[in-house]
Image (cartoon, rainbow, N blue to C red; front, side, top):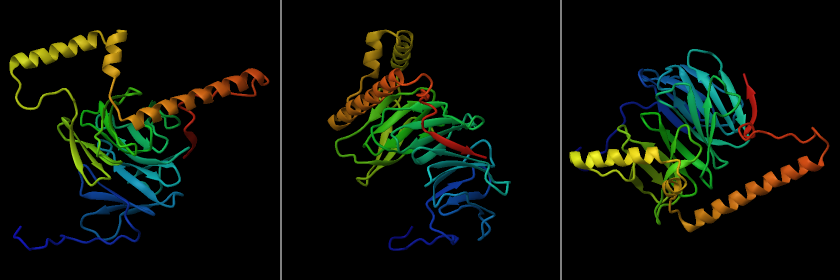
Length: 305
């Protein structure tokens, strides 16, 4: 572009309400926006094709399913996660959690799997065919999780949190296998995998975009056959002996800032105190009056059809 020239948009589409989120269809000339309502648009039209609204004052994020083309997921200010079918006139299903979800992500390799980043410091994986409870609870953050994104392989996902860290999780494991942080990085509001799954991008409150390696120990550039064979052999050794106590401790250990370490210890103490209090109440109460609720059932309030 010539210097001093200002680019202009090809087309301007005016929405009725402020737009808080937007996502494009994976194969068609459609896109979806969210705000006070969820609107589905076509590139060639200035009016939405469909408009959905179900209880929430505002819809904070929205995502098209990459495989099921007509399926849309959204999060709302009423602590809900809602599913829509772009061919239907009304929303499909709505699940209300105990705290608000900030973002959702669809697994690109498993169309029925949905992950949500929640204000209660956890991420939840759901199978939308059994939307009544989370399939996995992913822990390790000590503050609200602001964003979540799957890798193109669907085996990993990355999260960005208010606690100023970026964490990498396996999609079927409860704990993160890696954590990234720097002294100057502030609260992380967005995180994404690159298309080749080799790098992770994060955007934080200090106005910086950072690029991280998806595998921290992986060397960049062309590797010699001898180096590649050595790396593969080391991975096989690690896989073989990963259940050994010392190996497990070394693999799990990560250096984190002192504030996060203290917050983790405090959180662990609080959880232990809650469990102990529940155990004592159950012991001294009449049999059957105090029920034990599963950890996967606790965040769920209700499901609406």
